[in-house]
Amino acid sequence: MQIKNICCIGAGYVGGPTMAVIALKCPHINVTVVDANPERIKAWNGPLNALPVYEPGLAEVVKEARGRNLFFSEDISGNIERAEMIFMAVNTPTKTEGEGAGMAADLRYVEACAKDIAKYSKSDKIVIEKSTLPVRTAEKIKEILEENSTNIHFEILSNPEFLAEGTAIQDLFKSDRVLIGGDETESGQKAVQALVDVYANWIPEEKILTTNVWSSELAKLASNAMLAQRISSINSLSALCEKTGANIDELSKAIGMDHRIGPYFLKASVGFGGSCFQKDILNLVYLCKYYGLDEVAEYWHQVIKINDYQKDRFAQKIIDHFGGDLTGKRIAILGWAFKANTNDSRESAAIYVAEKLHKAGATIEIYDPMVSEDSIYSDVRFYWKEIPKTHKDRFDVLKGSPNFNNVDAFAIVTEWEAFKHFDFKKSMVFDGRNILEKKEVTHLGK
Ligand code: NAD
Ligand code: UDX
View 1 (cartoon, rainbow, N blue to C red):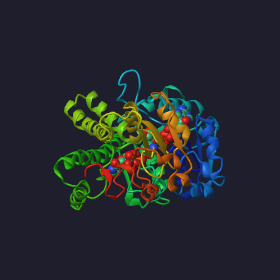
View 2: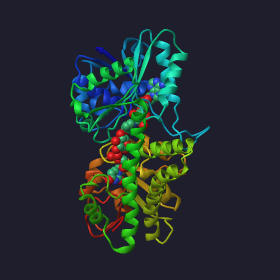
View 3: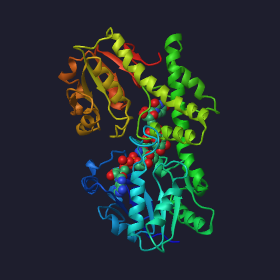
View 4: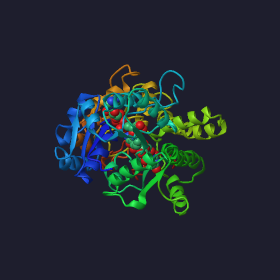
């Protein structure tokens, strides 16, 4: 089947960059990204230096494809109707209420998408799960599509996204693998081939892996769990290093040089953040419990518990340094994004660390080169008595802004390159990301 029109529902961190790259690499396909949030669509159609997602290289891709065969639109119904292939790239946060609250994935946005697809489709469609979903969600989506439509055939594929924020464009250009799960029926296999043909425009065929739907759905959750597990393993060892005089960076290097282990994701930190790891592991834990696999659930839950422990340990180190009370102290938090090169602060370790320091009495000042003040305020507004001071003038901050001269300590929580060049003079610095090599800096695990 020759695909001419793709529609993607969800113009976020996944939908925006992924579709921009598909459009760039497949000039013969019209790609339209729609979203329920008109502000997001306006921003995607706006100036290239103010796109809703900050990713190195994204603006260049959008510049080339936007208006040619890449479109951002508020017209959800019309674009569903026109497309032969529809990606669902909506958010799947952890449920906050009802059965499975605090663990299971909240599928309400995916379900709303499926209802829209059923409602506005007038011809057969290939519907693709791009969002990260619990294993066997395709069954539920099929049910919704069939209950809400007549005489239309929907083929559901799972095609989870493996990009990491901050390197999304490079990850999409040169994916380690593209995973496509489909039904083993004839129509299922035809749909799989149609999607393989899209990716084959730039991904070598040996990197396109086809499986059944359930393996594909579960492989995504399991990949994130395995990556996060490595971080929790090294972070747990950073605590032991501090007690024994071993050095966590030397340990990481020594461990990672074993080719069976490899060097990646062994960097000790103040704890992983981001919208994926915690949510996806909790979801995995919930699934294991649901299927009665309590030991397996507990094994994976421990990855989250060590992450919480590490964030807490870092904040406590700062509090202990000042004798257990931060009243009257000013602490500058350097970095608010959950990692460098993104404007995303979802589940950032910075939020937890700042909250704990604030509760211990500190006045907090925050600087991040990319996260907007609005995002910072919305991250803290639920629990803070006073609004923290934020510093947005990058150059002032890097020169050593006067406001920063009075702080009692700096806490580095994001590994932005700029912080390596910051002039800390004789200040007390707590480095949660191991980016500074200065002697006076207090590192985790050293
Ligand atoms: P996001 O919150 O940035 O974007 C989701 C978008 O979907 C929002 O703009 C929202 O307005 C829109 N939306 C929600 N319901 C809608 C509906 N019914 N109709 C139209 N639009 C709707 O989320 P994201 O970070 O792009 O993540 C999307 C999915 O991809 C999640 O399942 C996530 O787990 C997965 N994922 C994310 C990443 C990542 O790095 N962020 C990587 C791989 C996979
Ligand atoms: C992750 C997965 O890597 C990606 O494949 C998936 O599609 C989405 O989830 P992301 O969360 O965007 O990507 O970034 P990632 O590079 O994985 O970093 C996640 C967190 O782990 C960050 O807070 C990062 O600072 C931290 N991290 C990463 C460490 O603490 N140590 C490491 O060695 C690596």
